[in-house]
Image 1 (cartoon, helix red, strand yellow):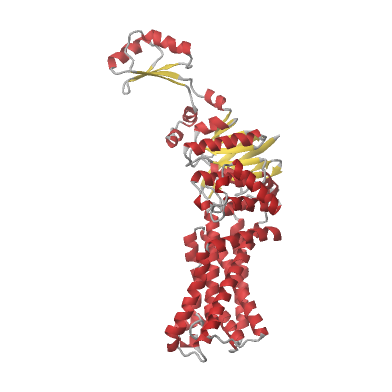
Image 2: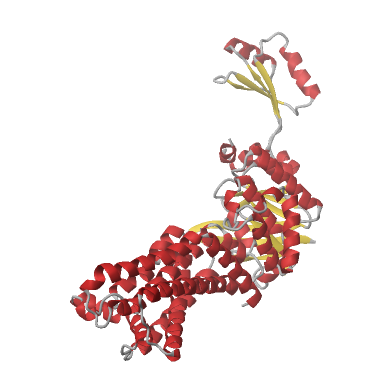
Length: 250
Length: 310
C-alpha cells in the first residue's frame, strides 16, 4: 500500500467533505438536535443517577460516530455507481490506497463532528471528570469504534453498489445506539430489549467511554468493547478487500 | 509489433456464455473496432482486456505485458474510457485531471501542467473550474477521455464512446480519435454504429453472440456481401411488368412495386439499365452500394444492428 497514493485519495475525500457541506452539517446537526431533545424534552423523565446530561453525552457521541461513518457507505457506493472505482481499478495504483483514503477521510470527518458535538455538550454543562488517562482511553476507544464502523460502511458501500441502498444497509450503524445503554440503562428496559441492549456491541463501547469520561464503573466493558470492535473491524476489512478485489460484474 | 494479442478468450457469467473463444490481433498505432449489437459481448471484452474482470480462459498480451501475470504492467500502458463517463462529478474538470496526474506520479506541478494542456486540447478550458456535475453529456465524455489520456497510454480502450452523444459531439470524438492515432496511439474501439467503425477503423471484427463472425478491413468486409444494386420504384403494376420484361436478371417486389437490378453502382452500368427501360414510367430511382448493415445481415441473417441504429 502506498502512502503517497493514500494521501492523494485522502485529499480527494477531503474535497468531497468540504463540498458536500450539507452532509457534514447533517452529521453535526442531527446529533446536536438529539442531544437537546433528550436532555431538555425527555431528560426530566429519566433518572439515570447523576445528571442526565452527564449520562447521555457519551451515548450521543457514539451516535455521532455511527451517523458519520454510515455516510462512508454512501460515499463508496457513489464511487462505484459513477464508475470512479472502476477507473481506479484499471490504473497501476495500489488498490489498498483507494480504501485507505476512504478510511482516513471517514476518521477525520468523524473526529470533526464528534469534537463539535462534544463542545456543544460542554456548553450545555456536561462535566467530564476524566484525567489525561481517561481522555486518552476514551479517544482510543472512539478511534477503534470509528475504524471498525468505517470498514463496515466501506464494505456495505461496495456490497450494495447503489447510494440509496448503501444508506439503508448502513442503517444499523445509526440505529444500534438507540437500543443500547446510550439513552437509558438497559435495566429499565423490558426483557427482550434489555437482553439485546446488554449483548450488542454498542453498549460496552458506550459504557467504557462513559466510565472513562465521567468516572462511572467500567467493569469488563472495556475488554468486551475491544474484542467486539477488533473482531467486527477485521472481519469488515477483510470483506471490503474481498469485495474490492473481485470482478465488478454489472 | 502488436499492441494487443488475445487468443481463445472465454468468459461466462454463471450459466450464460458471453465470450466463446475469441482471438484478436491489433497492430501498434492502428484503430481496431469491435462491432456488434447490444449483448454481443463487446463490453465484457473491454473489461477483460483492461484488467477489470478475469477471463475464464485465454491468453492476452497488451503492450508486451501478460494480462494474468503482470496486470500492473498492462494497467500502466493503457487508458480506459467506459460506456458511461467515470468522472468524479464533485470535483472540477481541472481537479479530475490533476487527480489522475498525481496518481501517475507527475507531482502536483506536473499534474497541473498536464491538466491545463488536456483541457485546452479537449475544448474544456472555459469549464476547467466548474464541477463536472455541471457539464453536458458531451463535455463529461470528453473529460472522461482526457482523464484516460493523462498518463499518455500506448493503448486506449474506448467502449462505445459516442453512444448517446449528439451528432456534433460525435464528430468531435471522431476527430479526437484520429488525432490520437496520428500520434501513434493504438485504439481499441467498440461500437454498435456501423458508420463509426467504417469511418475510423483500419480493421473491424464483427462480434455476435460471443463469437467473432468476420474480421477484416472495412472494404474486405463489404466484399463479403453480394454486390450493390439499382432500385427502381414504380407507381403501377403495369409499369413494373413492362420493366421486369426488359430486365432479365431483376428481382421484383410486387408489394413495394420495386425492381432491384444488380449493379456496381458505376455510371456505365446505371446508364445501361436506364437505356433498357426506354419509355417505361419510373417513379424513383436509387443506387445502393453495400454497407456494413448488409455485412452484418449477410453474416448473421439478422437485421438487429440496423434496427439498433435507426
